[in-house]
Length: 72
Image (cartoon, rainbow, N blue to C red; front, side, top):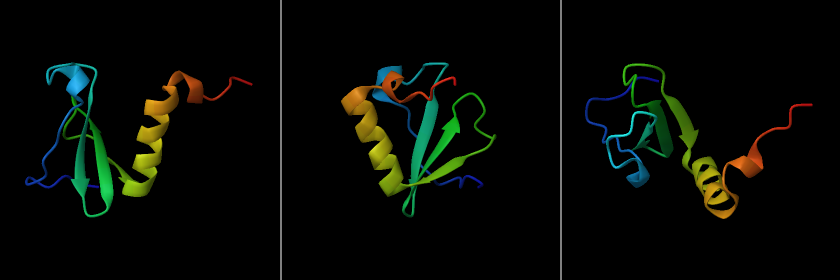
């Protein structure tokens, strides 16, 4: 996917807008777009809004560490 010059990208409020280990997100017609803030011209991950909502809800509820795959 290619980013449009009109898309409004944002970072988490936890990054204070200046973190170097951040992702940026944008909304685009039923999808949430995610990119690396250090490589804004790099690849963009597009996730359906419904799936993004499930992901964010899981993070808020349980945190990321609870959902890491096992190393079996």
